[in-house]
Image 1 (cartoon, helix red, strand yellow):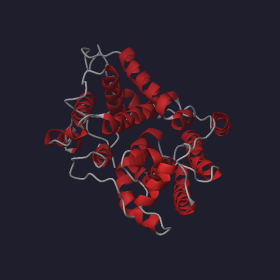
Image 2: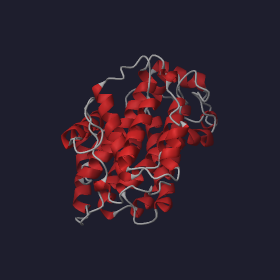
Image 3: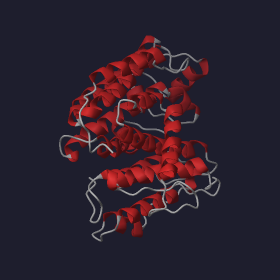
Image 4: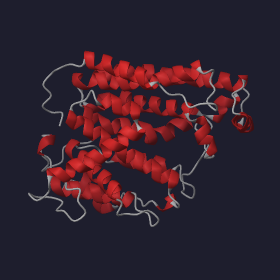
Length: 360
């Protein structure tokens, strides 16, 4: 769990402003609010384009929290894109050098400005590729906003290293690379980094009414629930990338092996054995949502409607898969826009209009 470092202000609003400009000062009075706002605006556009459910749910948050969530989403999306589309993603560097670990977690006091510089430096190192334009303005802005969010909300760095470790598992040529998971236990170990860690990153941003550690199991479970829903929805896309994110032993219990899965993909139709397997995994997924749901009440009242909305909309993807007779190879299950708006409107109606001075 993240802890308050010596020398860091307790009020997130008092944390430093980071300039997004390439040659602009990184700290001090010359760092501009406008350039940091531009960095967060870039993240907002990424979230709006690629994370429609999450983006709609964030409209229920206060603006400072909203843009912090956008920054964390954009960072995760950027890493995911590098893994999927870079020519040589195995060249990702290990970010955990001794100097950074000592500065982030050691006893020596550092200023918030120094902390922010170190975090951004390590995020850059973690994504350094010879084949990727390191001067990409949008990538630079996403890193800047993510670093600012990490510093402002004192998010534990271990959640990012766990996330990056999981992303490396998707990269051919890395030591941990794998594309198949035999059991749900193995798949959950992957999701510990790809999904649960993101839920843990968000907790300091959202705020809790209990000690953060008490809310972490439910936050991790909700991230896992979202991720498994993605895997069920995106079976075709993942298979086309030679990845199977459904536990193969669970599929085999219903008479489905990889050859069977690929045959269904080639026909573009799901048959009865695969339909039964997907129905079973949807039931498993719903159970994870049920276990995660009580944890929403551990969050600050002002943010609960947003998380309830995100959970409701994401869980509804499972309903859409069932309504389509599990034909995941025929169409990608989505929740219609009118339904998204209706659920979000209910969230607005239940939002608690309380003063939220710590939600910066």
